[in-house]
Every structure is written in C-alpha cells, then in structure tokens.
Length: 405
Image (cartoon, helix red, strand yellow):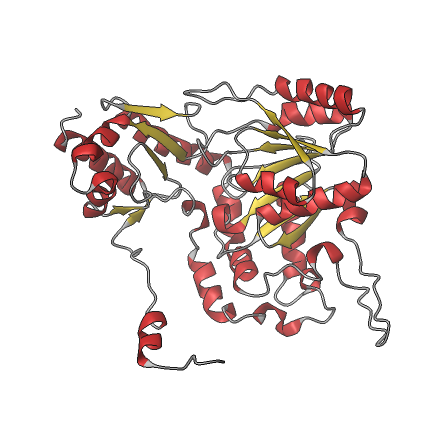
C-alpha cells in the first residue's frame, strides 16, 4: 500500500459525499430527468446496493438466467414492451452500439461503413472507431430546426454501395438526439434499410422509457436503450434488443480452454465478457421501475409531457434574444434554447456565465450547466404542472430583471 494510510483527512474527504439535489429544488438537468428513480427503485436500491447482490441466487452462471429476482421474466417483458425478439442488459447504450458493430463486423468482414445521422451521440462515433469502421453522416437541414430528411439515408446507402462495392455494415438512427431533443420517425428509415437489406439500429438512449417504441413495426433490427438516462434506473446500465436473425452473432458462447487447467466456460457470452456488468443496483432499479416505465409511455402520459414542455416554450420564446432550437412543437421534452441575451449579460456580469445558473438556483431550480450562457438545455420530463409553472415564471422573472421583456 506504499505510504498511504488511514487518517482524518481521508475520512473528511470521502465520508460525507452528498449532492445539492433534494426536494427543495426542481432538477431540470437534460440528462437526468428520465433517469430519476421511482420510489420502488429507491427501495430496491437499499436492498441491492452491494456489489453482485443480484447474483445471490444465480444457479446457471449467467445474470440473464436468474429467476429470483425475476430477471428472466423482466427481459422477456421488456422484449414484449419494445416488440423485439431478444433483450440483454449491457453496461450502457454506448456499449450496445459497440457490441453490435463488433458482432456485425465479424459476420460481414468486407463491410466497413456505418451510416449515422449527423446529430448522433459521440459514443456512436467511438463505437465505430474502436471497431476500425468508417462513418458516413446523414446531413441535417441546419439552424434552427436541424431536421433530418429520411430520404438522405437512401442516397447515402446508394453512394456507399457505389463507392465501396459493398453494402454498409449498419445504419443507425438517433431516435431522439442529445443536442436538440428532435424526435425522428424510425419507420421510413426502416423501410429504406429493408429495401437494401442493411441492418438497422435505433439508438433510443433518450427515448426508450419516455416514448412508446415498436421495433417490429418500424423494421428495427437492433435497439440500444439507456436505463440511467430514460428508464428510471441507477447507472450505468443499458439494454440491447435484437432480432432472432442476429441471435447467433450476439450471443456467442465461449469456446476457449486453458492449456494446463483445461478450464472452459461454455455458458458464458463472449460479447458480454460472460455477463453484463450490472450485478446489483443498476439492473434491480430498472426492474423495480419497469411498471412505471410502462405506465408513463402510454399515449395519454406522453401527450401530457409534450404539452408541458410546449407550454414552457410558448411562454419563453418571445423573450428578446432567445431562439428555441430544434423541431417544434416538441414531442420529447429535452429542449435547447439559444440565449444571446444571457450571453451578452454575462460579458458584463461579475459572475460571468455563472450568473444564469445562480439566478435559477435562487429560485429553487437546478440542472443548468455551470458557466454556460450562450445555450441552455433543460428537460421538463416528469415535472408536475405546479413545477412547470414555477419554472416558467422563474424564467420570465429573470428575463424581466435584466430588462429582456
């Protein structure tokens, strides 16, 4: 252990970790709203917070085959919920993308290009890079809506086939993007991919658990989901859904054997390093939240969440120097606004770009990125109407304070 020792300073540094988030504040953080735990998940977290606690009754050496608690049932239920053949937990949505690219790369070794929309999350790029693949982007229409034309997918697929004499390895659509919260209909892209016989993946990190999804209706071959972003689970955890057509390339059983010990692990899945690393809190909290996830993705509740965010937008978009970015009206509540007015104030404010975060915190609202005043991102998902009205009023009150209305 070298010269490291237990002491008072060590205790003070690590023994009192806490967040400023509590019931006194409304948290509008764009990454966190969909991942806030349900009461049932908080209860389960206390029981299963210890590492590997989910594996107490593992009889088959695989987390996806645990029956108590009902992991087997849960994975079947989620597959039915998303209308796809198979579901397996992963470390995160990003890991699901990595696994699919790796697996398809082995199945189609001559195919080297992944087609993605230009608002894809950075981990989509990294998943391709780590698998030695190339990227072709689908353009968007730019400011202020940043909309994607589905027809561009067909154009890019044709170009890849023409230039490489091979089909693309994979097409990925970001269902709801992280930057502007734009909802993209997966169906027309699914039809294009089916026409060209190219595997199709829906990145639903920001949508599965917030919006209803039907993979088979939309010709989706793979879906990546995020428990900690959108399914009320403690992180990190994702889900990978896939059709039976790709079962053998995803669920690859180990064949290695020790040359001296003769050890072998035929029940372990190579692509998951045996088991997904969600052995306690992540998976159990997702399971505990699942009934609420099903409830909140019903049509009435989805429409209610849309009304809430559009209510906020209608009240703040006329503030001088504010432009709402992305497609409107909003379907998903993640929102990005261009705030030239706040950026101008920040230039002469003693707190610089931190002033806007201070102003909202004084009014019981947290979640804006520190020091940023040119663009503000927020997410109203799950807020009550009382909280929505307070957030709206606080925004207008701050604008009035700085003579923007």
